[in-house]
Amino acid sequence: MKDITWSKILAVGVEELDDDHRTLVGIFNELNRAVREGESADYRAATLTELINCTVWHFSHEDRLMLKHHYPEIARHREAHRELIEAAQELQAKLAQADTAVANTEIEFIERWLTEHILTADQRLGSFLAQAM
Image (cartoon, rainbow, N blue to C red; front, side, top):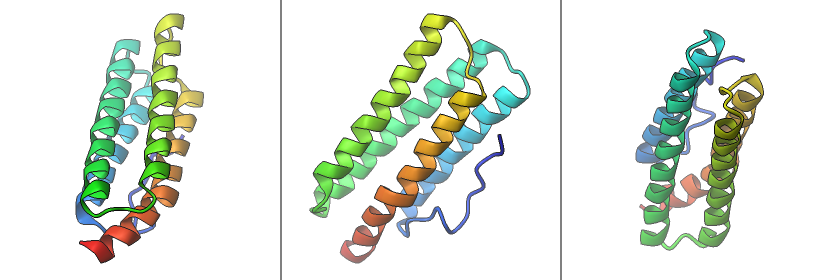
C-alpha cells in the first residue's frame, strides 16, 4: 500500500483543519510503513491507537468550529464522525481479540475512510468555514 501524499486536493482551505489533516495523514503513513516493514504487533497497535486518538481530537476540533460558526450540516457531519470512530474502534477491538496485528486489508480500510471523509464532508465544511471565518 502506498502512503497518502498530501496535496492541494486534500486541502479544505482552512489552515487549522488542513494542519490537523496533515497530522492524521502523517500518522497513517507511519502505520502503513510499520505494516510494510513488519514492525511488531505492539508497535502497530500503538500507532493505530494514536491515529484513533488524534482523529477523535480532530473531530472535536471540527465540532467546535461547526458550533461557533453555526454550520447548517452539523448533524450530518457529526453522524459521519460517529460512524468513522465506531468503525475504527471496532477494527481495533477485532485486532485485539484476535491477537493479530494491523495488516494490509486494515490499512486499505483506514486509508479509504480517512481520504473519503476529507474529500467529501470536510470539503463541504471547509468551503463553509472559509466564508464564515
